[in-house]
Image (cartoon, rainbow, N blue to C red):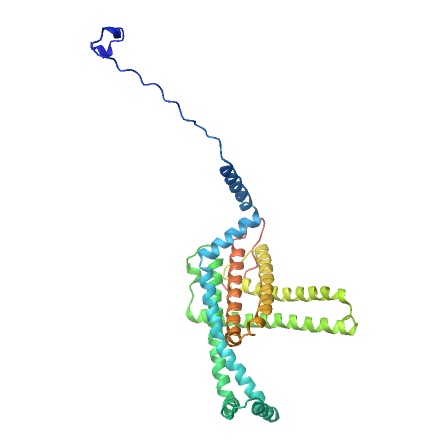
Length: 343
């Protein structure tokens, strides 16, 4: 038995100095007092998590994540591009329509020529403008037919791109399935019908807004109420409500007819209402900002173009985000809308 493992042997009889136990080091504090910064951070985190659990905030987060994950910004930029290109054939049709009007009113055409001569001091520039007007009148039929054909083709493609972008936000999964695949002629025919429906909805929307505004002004003048100052805010609110209602009809048709999947009723109604209000806000902002853009020389040259592109871009983003909002809604007892005629 060795001295090391003999527990009874006294240490004074050893030939070497035994190893002494090291004194225990003072133990570190296991729990340090929490600092004020960490306490504040924890409380802020808890508060943010509670806010994120609110139904409205949670829905907003889900819609934003779907919008970003399914390339809502990229689709919005593509819709803006195709929308701007579609304006060129529309301008051609408008140019041809003006040519038909001037051809049927020779006196009006001569008045325009006289005003050009009076307002333009350079004879070469005046002659160029006159030749342009003459060409518009002489080639009105050709320009009108070509412009109408191009406008129809670009409009059908624009509707198809808008449909695909909304479907990307509305589908349960990001990838296309077999239900979304269709023949090319069926796709163009469907987009053509959708374009006609969208134009009808747009005409109805603009008609409601213009007729309501004219009727409102007619009633005010007939009842001699235009001198009552405190009634003016009420009339503005009535006009605003009518405009929002017209926007609602337009977006309701878009969100119900364009996606292949049937949306849920409460989600569709509420999402369309958000889109109608947002579209009215966009129109107000553009109405306020465009006049200030065209005041400067550079704004006069590019302000209208930039304003038009901004209008299309915000319209596309608003439409796609509201489509994502409708698709991510979670309301109890929310039935789906009635089935559509196509499958």
